[in-house]
Length: 200
Image (cartoon, rainbow, N blue to C red; front, side, top):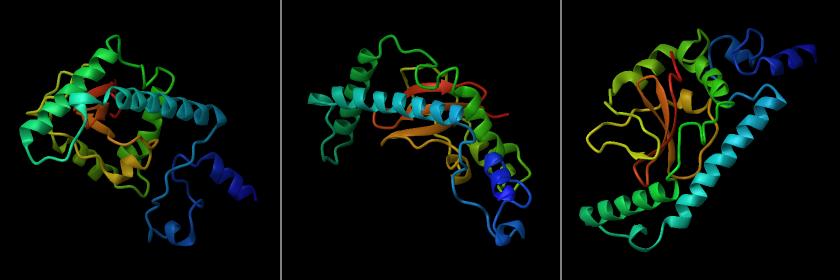
């Protein structure tokens, strides 16, 4: 019982003696999302998820008329629908600023959740994760509520990294621009929010 209690407290980072027998022998890489350690952190995650859902609901509200995505193979129509949706979201969020979704309170927790996947010496391949994140080198002037440049690549976010983070509503994605974590709206090709220097 004592061992289980200790392992629950340190759930955010791999600890010796806290895995299954196979994991402790290095035979299995844990795939489950780490548990949030405290009730305060759980409340922060809930608040973030609520803010992300509010953004999703706002986008859904303005996703009508010429912005409504239809079944078409015409790339010009798809681009026009995306651009119209983005304009509608930008108008609805005219006062948007960094920290509206990634609040100042949640940002340290995101950095804490990301750290094991990019700097730990535990079972995750942190070096490969970091190399994958930095493989694409987008040149983006990050601005909240602004378009993501069409001529710039999107970073690949390794599964190990995604497993550390809260789930997002449909079409919202975590992406990296160098060391910065952005909340990317793939439907509107829009930067919804950012955490600067999210990883070392």
